[in-house]
Image (cartoon, rainbow, N blue to C red; front, side, top):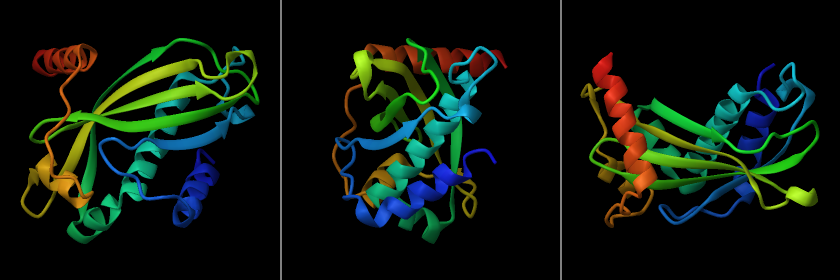
Length: 182
């Protein structure tokens, strides 16, 4: 049992969450570090952050209404790259929130930010970890990536992409270098 209960919870709460306006809206999910999240050292496993990030992206797709276009058009979500920076360890039973938001895009890729933020205690409000995710949607019928302007329109947004910040540009540049090296 990996994250089935958390996944089920994210789906069940959807009817009770407000619609998320993209790109300004932030998906927020609340969790607690559970025993199955821990590594041998006793803090949250580094891979668990990435897996829980999947739930944040799912919530973003559901809350923004994008899921309708994904199902209707049979788009396949594709993860291309992720970079994560661990800042503070999260220990057993600590409460945290996952904040997920769209921070940029170009023709065929979107960049999403995940922040894991402590909720209680002396570290409340501090960021435990931050990740940048690059991905898109693939349309198997036309064998091409869906233009992000189409994806954004499905979420009710037809404006320009936010300006890429220096850290996002560096992330994309590093990803491109790795792609070319392969």
